[in-house]
Image 1 (spheres, rainbow over the protein chains, first blue to last red):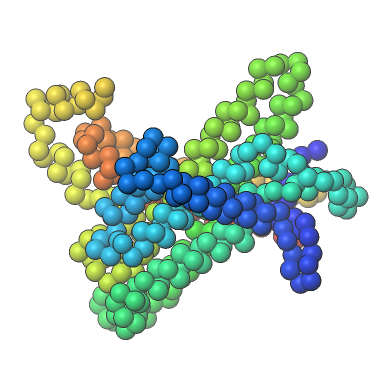
Image 2 (cartoon, rainbow over the protein chains, first blue to last red):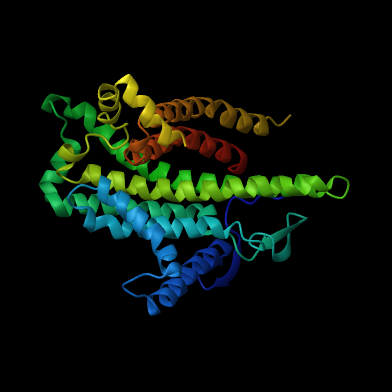
Length: 289
Length: 73
């Protein structure tokens, strides 16, 4: 029978410390990143070769987006955003490797024999995502305070624009700041955990019929590739939301970005105005091709 | 009769309607903008991802409620 465990299972108990299998996943992610950094930095050159540009690509791509959206202080938090992106991306994708979540030992729980895997993807554990969300939370508060000063930050956050609205708006502001913590952590956890359950369900459903219907073997593969995309998107969302919260907390955000979660109002009207009918057909061809 | 699974299923299923519509509207807007001005893909990308994430957060809240219903006794 299919067994789903929402919390990470403990593997070792050393004194008061419990070592769970999601910590193995987090450790594996960190070690892989450190090894990759050591291996590629050792032979890094100023003119990147083929492998080096492949490794540098995700870093440069994320940093470019932070530069375009981060305002004047983008250098202060670009390393954090890029690191969160790469770390979460790898933590998500480790769960898709064969053997992760399937190799383990059997244990009797409530008279039922269940498999306790040795490795669980780190982001399928709420402790890990909540920790990352706390890092992001303190990053945007800390940067807001450091760039603008404590009083400016408090005024910016807690005093509403017409001052008489403050008693009404301040509780809403506090709740919305705290709900970022919840939505950041639960979004990543929910997506990765649901992805793991989805893959397990698909494997569970198809292994029964795979001997009769060999084509069923490809059904989990479809979901596996879907999870590849979702892991990427969730890493992107976590990193960019961290960036957007930091930009909103910075003192000068009013000139750069009115509201990070709304669509850019400058794009569509401008595109509508400067587009005569003849120009649009020639313009549409390279986009369609 | 234990209605817990039904409650969790309803919480998740009903809670997914709103975010589904919201994400659909966001994708619709982004695709329209992209069709009119393919060069603006860079400018659209980040607000689009953030908008989808914020719409999806509501669905995540219902996922949390569903998980609480199932696992917290």
